[in-house]
Amino acid sequence: MTRISSNFVFIIICLQMVCLSACGQGAQKQAVKQSIPDEINVYEGYYYGGGNVSSFVPCESNEKPGRGKGYWLATNDQFDEMYQEESTRMMQAAIGTLGPGMDGGLYIKFKGIASPSLDTASGEGYGYLNQYRQQITVTEAIQMKYFIVPYDADLCKAK
View 1: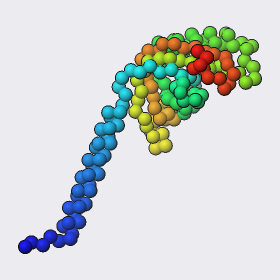
View 2 (view 1 turned 90 degrees about the vertical axis):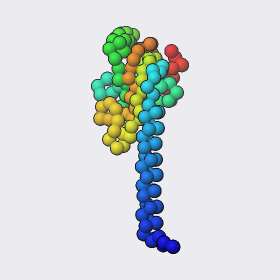
View 3 (view 1 turned 60 degrees about the horizontal axis):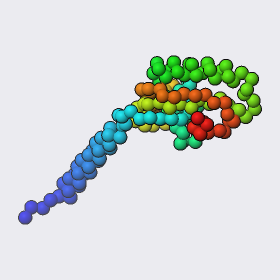
View 4 (view 1 turned 90 degrees about the horizontal axis):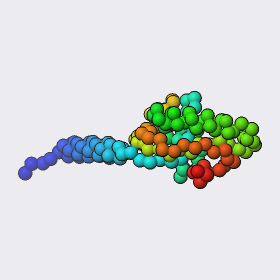
């Protein structure tokens, strides 16, 4: 009868653990690839763009857009033209109407493709200085409207 040394058993167990660990990491990477939305979805919410900010927050998020908030929005020419027209219209309408506690907010509805989520704490991310965990790339602008409302108003309900 052949006796198996304890060192040999230890090595076999370690090799099995390494193989299981590697297989698990491969499954995790594959799951991330499968969870990347490659289809075009319709989004609606608030947008703030200017300087080094292109922040979109969906209606259901209950937060205002701003630096590092929501999604980095990668716009296209159609979106930029619509944004410029709506910004000009809003500026003309806002002269003398913004008072204490009032704010101008932009409601947008568009089609786009969301990116995978990244870890901004590790230096990964989207947008200026990688401040955003995710990005949505605009494929078609559908609607855009500025509202002058109380600061805490819900623009998605105001539309």
